[in-house]
Image 1 (spheres, rainbow, N blue to C red):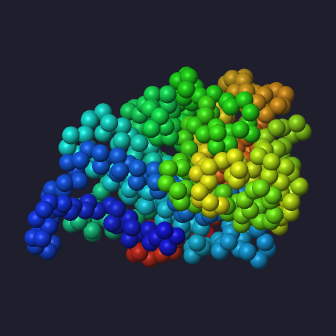
Image 2: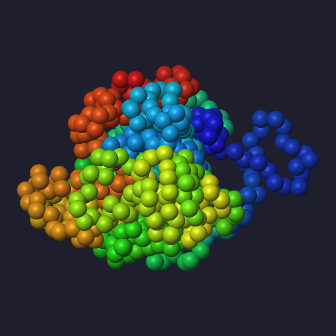
Length: 494
């Protein structure tokens, strides 16, 4: 999968492929003849497989692991490349120094992976309603799940690359020319409109979290769709709609703050009270899991009764210094050489002094298929962030006192006193600072700085050569521009 060529994969996933499963397979139709019937669609149970293929893509290397870590975390002031100086992680040194370009691997794999995921979602959205005998309500739910995931994939793309192709349907085998025509840069506003619509459609049909049976826990819910929509609206600065959507999540009474911040990332607390959406690491098949997410960030050294790792994506000194005295989140986010961890493992020595505790997987207390394939989930969206999104929206709308109430809920859980900020500008800065320490190492910091309009200021103060007007976006992979024959336009500065 690491060498998946996205355009070719997208071409295949966008085209409706029909094959016959009848007993007359020894008498195939003449070449270039479209076969209109497929026994796949006479088996309602197969509909779920289309949707599961969308979920399964989230655990892949390109989608959620090394390149995504490089793009979303190592680029930021929260993290350093880590590992040994001579181990560049292909281009993770470039991601850290902001010297990446159109041929760098990490942006390429993020692009490839998300468009492949979108292709799978398009297939599910197109095919699920065609199943004979499938309960209509279940079909509607399945389509809602696929739309949620398509929105998730597109949100990753638009934050990374800005103007990108909008592919939102399956093409017939006769529409190859149309595929190439549509595979062109579209304004980011169009992509955001698609994301919004997908999430509104999903929220309208998906069940509440507590309505799922045990076998379906982990599937997208109404709250997940509303929560992601609130986050999207925050990026668009649609504050009134954002605030209302946050209140929809809060008033559903499905979520709350986990009292012990450190336990959010324990396997025993998966899908806990704070969880809106997680990437599922365990599917019951030994040897499968989120390959490499935890191992690439594990300590490069000696850890007694624990797994070592590649040592990448290490917390920066700047992040360490960002915590106020007494903030319990610091010890729950960062562990260091000499520490005894929650499961009794001890980090004896390592190439780097500090590591990401949120990406720690226990060898003795959690389910792992091996040191590489962890069965542990990745947290994507949680209630703590919803409260901070609401605080930001309320403050931008002039309801600063209401914003402070939500901000203080987060601070109280962290063991801190109420904020002393009171003016709109001071509260804005307090919320932004709280987002940093609350969501540290959770793949949001770089994108937060960009949307806040202060990425250059913060990054340059951190010693990174951030170029205004360029580094807000990542370069479009050069191979995609070439394959599109120039219909996809490179981002400024690259």
